[in-house]
Image 1: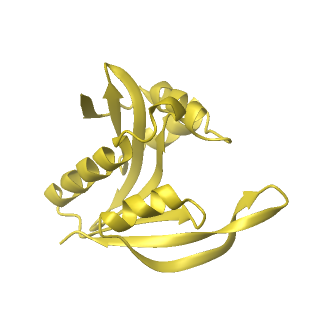
Image 2 (image 1 turned 45 degrees about the vertical axis):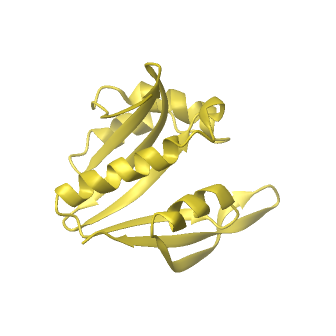
Length: 148
């Protein structure tokens, strides 16, 4: 069973631990500390059997929100945690009166793109050569989900 909850501002280390398992260039706990200290930034964490396994970090401003990062620990992938987090975030944002959600994703991240498109996100822009990859870079796709 997956439990999803709002992360507390003093739990940056939880996010950093998940991030270290999820990404090649993870953020340090101090980065999460700084982000969670801001009143416009919050995070949801998904846990399986009591162990945090995925998170979504979001910044909200007025009627708009932006996903800053969503990550799933490598050992917990392909179990629907990203989808569950995304759906919980959307429900939370709708309750708060947020009208749109924005995010960016690497153009070669097929799993993430499939998730976002299945949830109704549409591509609204592109940042050329945004994500470094080896000797080159890959574009970022800008996505939007209308919540109202």
